[in-house]
Image (cartoon, rainbow, N blue to C red; front, side, top):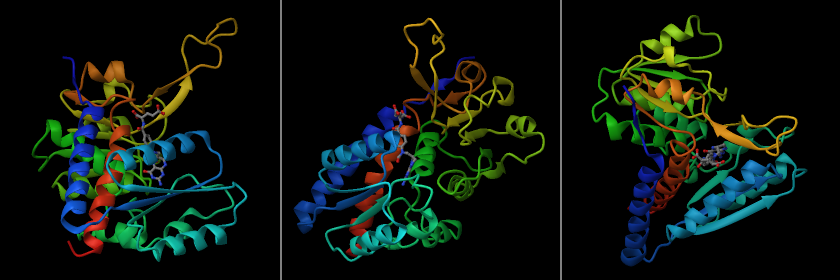
Length: 297
Ligand SMILES: Nc1nc2c(c(=O)[nH]1)N[C@@H](CN(C=O)c1ccc(C(=O)N[C@@H](CCC(=O)O)C(=O)O)cc1)CN2
């Protein structure tokens, strides 16, 4: 069997098109243009790329992009002061602080300063609590995108065994809550889980979000399962060697051994081109939602 490849780029484009249509309607009917403020602290190269891409996607959707790029030495108090300013700015509907932050800054302290109604990353304790309690929340982008991808191949997840590998605040924990809301039987597995391979083999839906290159092998997967690979790991290109011209070249791989997994799974997301593009698409979706809700629309 060869798994169906879930095309995250295509699904993300459709989400972005829907957002653009919603933004156009908001402007036409109410004269409102949503604004998204992104705060980047430091010069992490991957974060710089993500922030640039967020700005481009925001403008393409017809929204205003406001970027704040701060030096790596910026103090926690200065970042918090900026977040408070953005909370009070009526032109700003969504606020996002790009992660990771430099080591001297407590990310939780900064994130929890964001007004929960502008928290388009869904990472504040208020939104995390709302999600767990099944209340209306702004939902973290990568888990939200993962659910949309699962729905392209499994309309009804009710009763399915779902295993989430990883328990981060950004992905694993919110994804487990979302799968529970879809009426799955959810297991969260992590570094202390005993017999993790066997746990994964029970999964009708297996979501891997541990940030360990290709840790999930083909024989961890139940035949026909839906496999959602959320890992984005940059590894040396295989052709790299001491005499190779490709020295220094890298490539992206997921947490799943893709070639082995696709021979067993029913459907699988690739890396790149799977969950990754959904992250920014869902960020735009959350920004539109925040803009509407803030005005009671
Ligand atoms: N505040 C946040 N910080 C971070 C988040 C987040 O959701 N909120 N997620 C990640 C980074 N991220 C967005 O910020 C992100 C990661 C990956 C992609 C993506 O499209 N990936 C592509 C490959 C891109 C490449 O070539 O490097 C793919 O998988 O196809 C978008 C956004 C950590 N920080």
